Length: 325
Image (cartoon, rainbow, N blue to C red; front, side, top):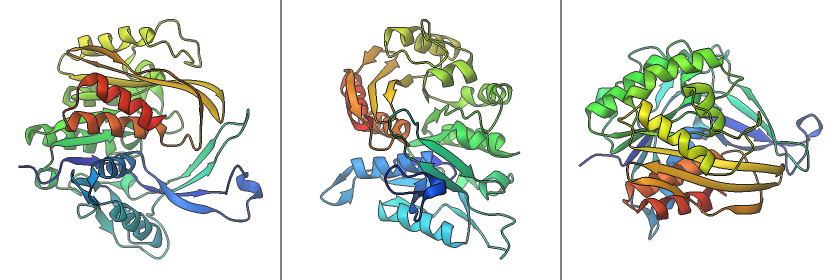
């Protein structure tokens, strides 16, 4: 029996956001939180599986942090949600900050003004990771291993580290998932596609939105504009089919479809393709957005949770849509 049910690998940043819809330049105070796609999945799955105040699924997070107040804050917040942080590599703080933990500055949008994210993650501990810093063969005792394209974009060795982790996970019998999570501010389309070619052979479940599949895998949904604003699931049946034909070892493809009406009002639905067929959720219209940041992570979390728990595909995708709406 595996030690963990779910493990993820990524970078965690301390989130700083003004209250409400204030602008950063006008703020007199900042509220702290955590910005971490992969850690979000751990926290969500831990919370989803809590019954009688005890998590039923054991989750663990792997990253590299500096022993500074930001690192302690991340560790404490994750542990409060039942996430095992014992596999985190901690580097001593050098009193200057040559290696550091990242910060994420967030503005929550309103009306026509979109939400805004600015990452101050240069020289982060994870971006400087070296081969051998993490003993994957030792710690990867899990049913499911998850990571994202954000990690692979961060540093010189992060792509090879992700490949090493995925290989070790597969060797140990884990299901592996990869959220493409393309960020044009982190790397070029060419570098992202080159990384995807190295990573995809070791992935069982692939997640992403329409732009991710187009940019990183070269598979584009028909009848979508340059802003990828279509929410018709039939446009993505061919995308999911194309992914599974190109990578026949893939067992599931999941994506979320968002139609943005304003920063606070969206239409939303999700789709899933497995070897059993193509499944779509109901369409949620005029969903009021509290904070869009992390919506894709919520979808990934709920989808993975449903698959870990063995729920039918239609039930899983309906729940994933509702949970992430």
